[in-house]
Length: 360
View 1 (cartoon, rainbow, N blue to C red):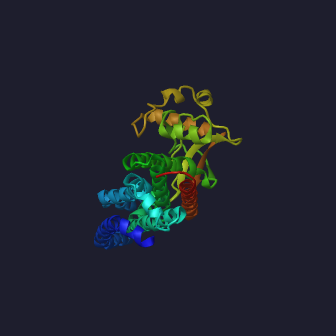
View 2: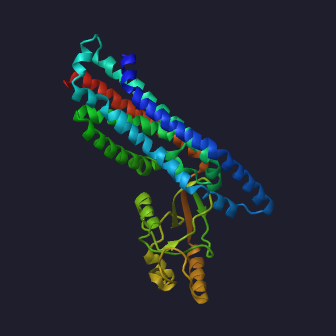
């Protein structure tokens, strides 16, 4: 059965190995130069005594290639689910080969278990090797950017979990629909929904975030729109109103900052109503236009705004909700375990369905 599975699978495996070899060669040709440039930039900026701007500039080096490789790591699990998972059973049903296999002293359970093991483990291996190569290549850029969570799903262990889950989603879709092309479409749609749900719904809640309290700084706190993306994120994940007062995001290297809120000692959010009471006209735009980005204002407006922030700061402070950088690997392992467990449960369902139901 293993030999039969390999004979059916050897062409897709050869294509995957060829594509992976191309990525390895590309990384091998460009990676050492990128690492050398990072080392040179680091040495020079340390001698100059200022690495902040230098690292920010270097993090955009080879932006096109970095984006391409990151995108490749992102879509490979979906491709594995579509082209390896969905046809695994659906193709056998469409070709009418299942009854023939089952009459050759091969049980349904063994037939499916071998296919899942051989093809599924191969998919996980491909995704893992691709992630390893891209993680190694992008390491200098990731070090310079100091934003580990921005590429969380494109690095290290997470792509392996996504590959396992996407593959079994594809197998399940093919088993239930019994047609390869519709199963491929359903696999892509389902995986995208699951991936987005994990990134924005589950991952932020795997580990309780840390909190940091900071005093409001009149020099870095400004006014923005209450319907800005930050405001909507605050309302969504923190359940409280968001005022037009927007403190600057603190510099926490490699941290994942969920939100920055302005709260009092009891944890109550600063609302526009309270802000208007303390600083009449400021929340509604009296201190300048409430638009994203930096806009020039008069000296008197700046003084008025800073006086307002100082007054509010006597009662309110900035509350930062975030995941520290040292929790990165814990989240990687937890997300891998989550995807792996879901994949195993789906695989068990497939085995049960094949054993109990008439699928031919």
